[in-house]
Picture 1 (tube, rainbow, N blue to C red):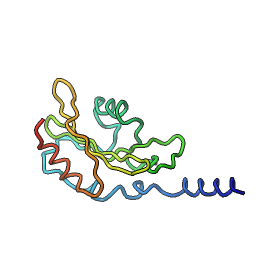
Picture 2: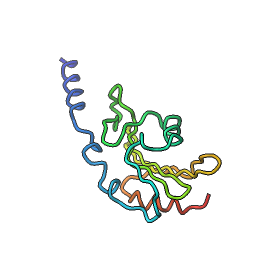
Picture 3: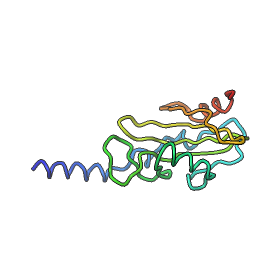
Picture 4: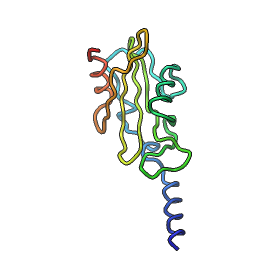
Length: 143
């Protein structure tokens, strides 16, 4: 009987739409950076290879925006623990926004500086802050 109840709970959880699949957060998708953005990308597959390499080596498998991922500590096999939100380029700097699931659901802004080599300038977690204002502040920071 316990096994049946556990299976029913698991199936209900799997059928429940991902919170972020329904609405990542309007501000995450609609806010505008004050910096002049020369490229804004809505899919990880559209980002330059160096960003995809960073994701693969430092974050791990990442779902595209709107795709299912493990957003809680209840892990469904075959789903990544992170999901792409937004990326872009402002001058010699790139930014990447993503969500990470787990015991605590978090959102991240990573800012990269592209020189001779790619360097991570900042990696910040945010919850309810305006991600554009946060990204603008990180882009303004000195190396």
